[in-house]
Length: 241
Image 1 (cartoon, rainbow, N blue to C red):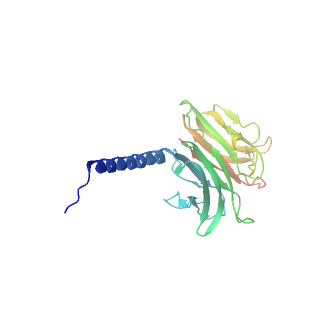
Image 2: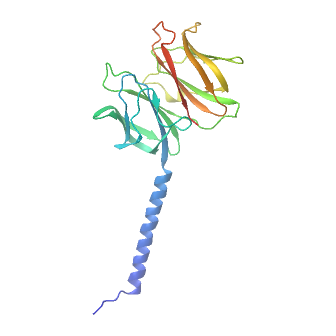
Image 3: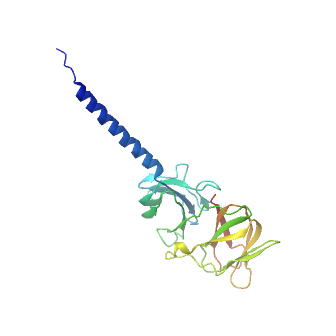
């Protein structure tokens, strides 16, 4: 004899199913909204190409991050990560060079710089900064300068209209450096010749730099100021928007 199911039980099962569907839907919505954005730049000259992992999951799925390169593309250098406090590892094969926690706020954008030499160390230093992505007016560019060299110096930018000098000196970045101290400068958009100066002498030629209106940049400088070669320092450029 075939058993029948009462209408009350059927109604109960339908309600339970709907509750589970709503929970799953909300969970997916929360997961999609709980994003932060991270740009990573490898400026360690003797580090191998690096993998970037959050909680053991690789973020740079398109390939390892080589020396003198930044994730993403100009105007969008960011990888997508889950906001919150997470374990971050930078590694190559079985060798781990950075292993620690990183805190990212939802919808915020960050730049992580991996620096220092592996010659006398088995780990790398890191600097993480929160990026500003509110674009200036279309005749102005925002530029943030970072000094990863061996000592402090000034940066001077010249063109036919402006002479811009960073005041005070760009301090050498240390593990104890305050991330909030790295501020953006507003400059007129255009092409500049850029130099690094130890004192009143513009000793190091960092070539030309073109910045577009309404765009936001980070200029990072690496090298050894003890060299007599005017090209001993080099500059890198990240366009954030």
